[in-house]
Image 1: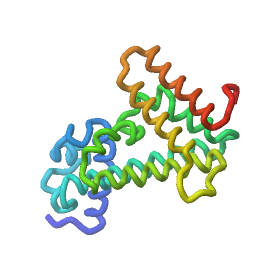
Image 2: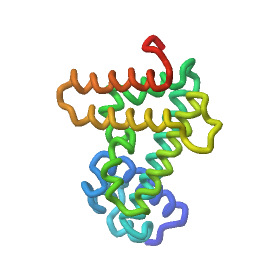
Image 3: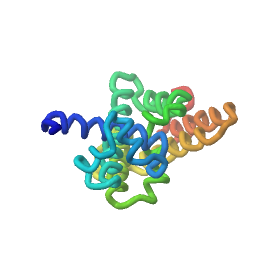
Length: 195
């Protein structure tokens, strides 16, 4: 049975959304096409009508995940009296640490992405640049065309802290990593610990 263009586009979007979650949860090589398609409620045969390759899907799913992550930062900061503090409270939290399928793709897939094709790495670089821009805006330093050293250090620190906290089974130590990162982000941003 032939699928309408509208349904084909809806199916494609469903696959991209499912892959965005499933790649973050299992890694690029930790899940096959059959399970990716099953996660979208479709058969594996439908994959080849929608995507050129698994790398094509990985690139699209990564872009979707990174755009979503940037929006989450902007949403967290939107109505806050201290936007950077609001982003830290969301990002460097126990809840976000446990949120692998919907959480930050940089923490979930960063090391994995570094070993992928240029097609898959490109959305990560674009997403990193977008996060730098958000951080610079939050710190009132959005005037430069290139990211500030502060934004680069803060993003590196936050992503690293979430990554390490997800590895550590000792709850107290895991939370300690997130708390230490919060303090250092405040210091880097020239905020005292009472902010």
